[in-house]
Amino acid sequence: MKAIYLTIGIALLSLTTVFGQVKTEKFKVYGNCGMCESRIEKAAKSVDGVSTADWNKETKMIVVSLDSTKTDVHKVQMAIAKAGHDTEMHKAKDETYNALPGCCQYDRAPAKKEDHGHMN
Image 1 (cartoon, one colour):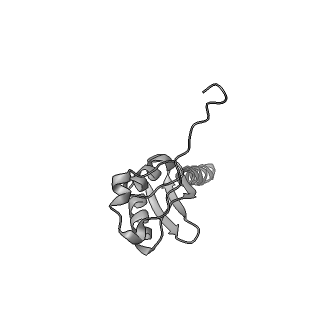
Image 2: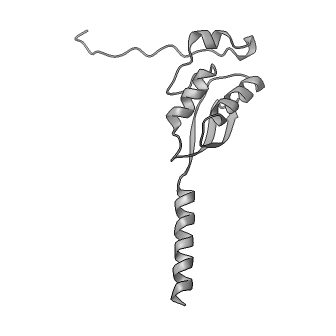
């Protein structure tokens, strides 16, 4: 009988470990239209470890499910920026952004200037 309880316990622990690796992340990605949505979601899903990606064009927010043992939100945002879309962490290269179709060229946020205080 103890063997059955031990087996069940190990199985439950294994399931908890497997499911504990899946994280859901939500962050802003700039874009405008359905073509942007396809490009953004495709870029996110191209990252090994990302299982789902859903971008909302009204809120400009993406929800990504990822395996935290294979990737992290930083890598996902880098892939999206490489596709031409600015994220909270990464800005797309100007050349990549400029190559987007006209309807996909969103208003870009100005670059943040570093604050050096009163000394500089």
